[in-house]
Length: 88
Image 1 (cartoon, rainbow, N blue to C red):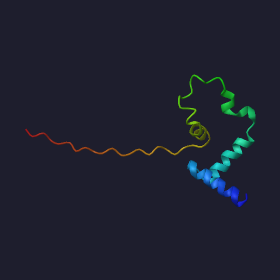
Image 2: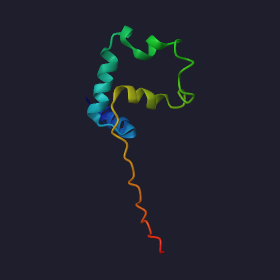
Image 3: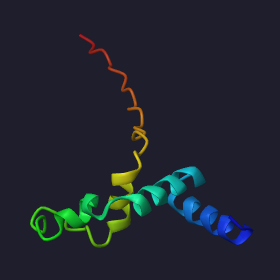
Image 4: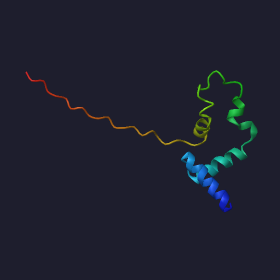
């Protein structure tokens, strides 16, 4: 890759929160996949009633999730509430 291509890859992957290696692997999979194996095209016209309503506006996110496993969600720890003893 020349410097311009490498820089473009770096910017593209950073915007998505990916490493350059992840971006290259996704591109290789997409370019070398048999057209009959394309999961989105094979479902074309069959899933319009079950797609999320925000599919068009969040298409990139859904495609990304189908190729790259996301990290587990980070949950905040619940605040512990001290129980007061009742006075009798």
